Length: 303
Image (cartoon, rainbow, N blue to C red; front, side, top):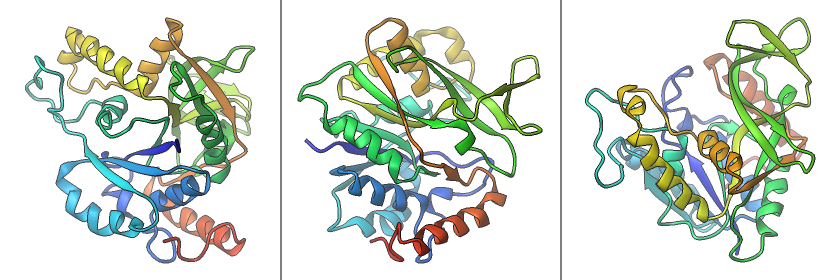
C-alpha cells in the first residue's frame, strides 16, 4: 500500500496573520502545501488528506483541492472545538481546538495505511519526503508500534527574522527517539544555535542536533492510542481549566516511548527547511522557491 500524506491545515498563523495556508508563493500562485504535495507524490505517496476548519471549506476547495484533480486522490476532514469523545463537552470560554494530535485524530476514519503527518505551512524539501516515504513504504503489512520522525538538523531550520519553536530531540544508540522537548525560542546567538531555557538562559546546541518539524510517520494503530489518551487528557481537571491546553503530537509520542509501547526511529535528512513564520519571511521564501525552479528542482507550474 502506498502511504498517505496527512496535512494539518486548520490553524491560523498568529504571528504571520491571515490564512497563510492559502498564500500563493510560487510563480503561478502555488502555496507551500502544493510543493509538499508535489514532493510527496514524487516520493511515492498515494493519497492526500487535509485537516481544515469547516469555515473555510469552500475557499479551500476552490483554491487548493481543485488543483489536484487527476493528479492524486484528496480528501478533507474537519477539526472543530466540539469534536470530542462521547461524554465530554467544551469548557465554557474555550475558543481554540485541541492541538495537533487532536487534528490527527480527525482523520481516523479515512486513513487505513501508513501515513505521514506534516504542517501545511513548512517547506520541508524533497529529501525529507524521500527518507520517510521509503521508511513507510517498507513497513510490513499490518505493522504496528514502529513509527518514525524526520529529524531535521536544527541549523537548517532557522529564520533570519526572529526566534523559532522546535522540538529538540534526543535518541538512543539504536537511533530511536527518547525525548522531544519543545523549545519555543531558538536562534543563533553570536554564532552557535541556542535555545532559551526555563530560567531565560541561552543554551548552545550543535548545528546537527535533530529537531522535530512535525514530520511524523505512523501506522493506523496510532489513532487508537490517541483516542484513548485524549480521553485521559480531557479527564484531567487542569487541562479543562486551562482554556489553552493542547493535545500535541509530542505529548502522545513521549507517552508511547516512555511506556515502551512503540519506537520512533529518528531519520536524518539533509533538507533545509524554510517557512513563513513571520510576515518578513515571505519575500525570502518566494526567492528561494524561484531559485529551486531555476535549478530545475521544480517545474514552473506544478499542477
